[in-house]
Length: 251
Image (cartoon, rainbow, N blue to C red; front, side, top):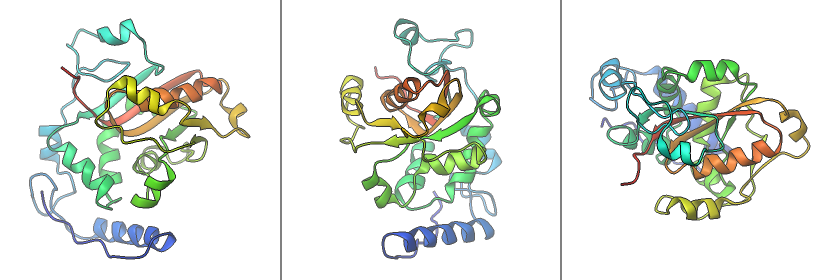
């Protein structure tokens, strides 16, 4: 993967956020290599790599796991329907997207948001979901993680996808949770109980509305289910999740 210029070292807080925005803006204005194949000059994701690694595939309409072309809903969702009405994922979580998303989230590079939002927008079902939505809500980060990263990757994606519908402050993260990556679904669900809520002074405005939830990676669905539970309690009538990547089903 092509190396990007080092992010300037700055102090925490507002100054760091400004520096990141300036850095991201500069990277978009200079020639660069495709982060996957190294082609130069190119966008961060060249058309060839998108065509090779991001081919649309049949997915379960409720959880976005790959399914045969003639199947609309997987067996797990038929047995235990999720709280989401629909879910769309751009790619499978694996090479090269796992590395790309890691650069976006953990290496202080918010400039990835535009390219990855474009990848998500091109996914079948995403444009109609955005058009039908009353609100687009990014899954919020805990305060400690937000301070550490300097930005919420889901919020950046939401702004790129539908800035005029995005509301970053309606869905609240009430508490941090232990690292989820190595936990099975039932433990993730237990960790996330009560982790989300709708801003109480604005909750009434959700009644009868269609909501799109944005996140970067869907693994077990526990985070999206917990967020959807809070939105359902406030009266949302339809919830669609849009994610960049869907991890494979556990075997």
